[in-house]
Image 1 (tube, rainbow, N blue to C red):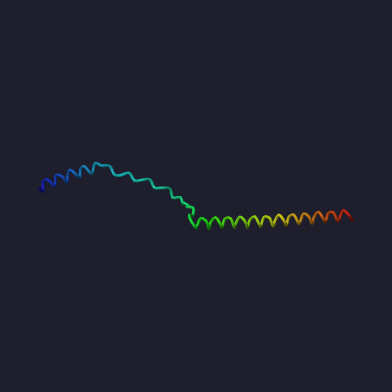
Image 2: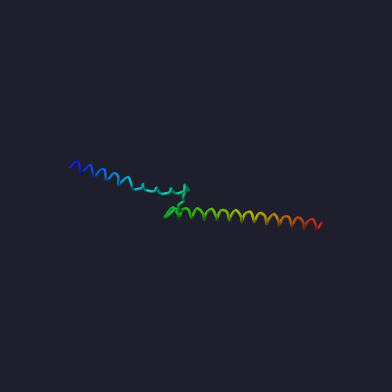
Amino acid sequence: MRMLFLILALAGGAAVAQIPPAVPEPTPPMVPTIRPPVGAASRAARNEDFARERALRAAEKAEDRADAQARQKETARKLRRMER
């Protein structure tokens, strides 16, 4: 029995030695992945984006209004100079 086990162990060892080692899988590139939020977090993020856009539009409108008023004052000043 011992002799049979010894023969099987030696034959098995030789057979295992002939099997090539498993090829390691290539490692994925180390690139950070950004996952979009889902559920309530996505709604909150969308609401924040909309609020930010509204604030930007309001600021742009205020700037445009200020520019238009400055232009009106300038043209009124030029007209007054011409009338003199």
